[in-house]
Image (tube, rainbow, N blue to C red; front, side, top):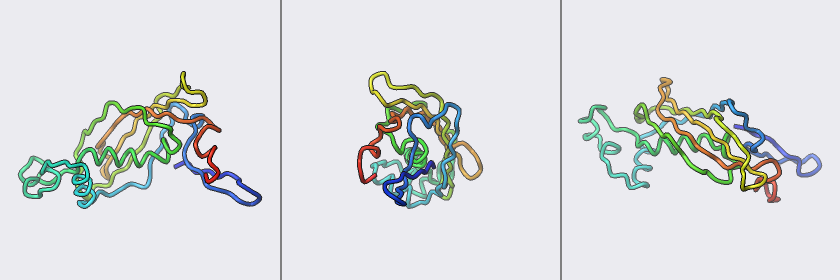
Length: 173
């Protein structure tokens, strides 16, 4: 997590978070902490909120009969959790998420697993059509407590340059 502060008056400071376009360097890796231990409640709530009716995610007897022997955490929860974990390092100042590619789930996630994330800056370039903004391409990798890779994806984010973020224009930020 990148945390800064700006002086808003004599001896008066306000914390700020996130990176400007200029702060990203190709090859940098950001570890996202803290991790999150996934509970049965997390999985049930997300499954219900998204209307995912596959019993593998909430019916214990069904889960026992599968090759996994128990319920799986719904993969879109895993993806959402990793995106959320990466916000403070990668997209706290974002104008927009432009896209996601190559989403993979190489290992299952179960209740009780603790998820950790990291993101690597793959590319960055100034926007051709939006002055003072740039596009950053990152690869996020999620691992569990056994250091097994459970999810990977690539994301393109539109990031403001210094002086062009919303917080640079709004007094309360």
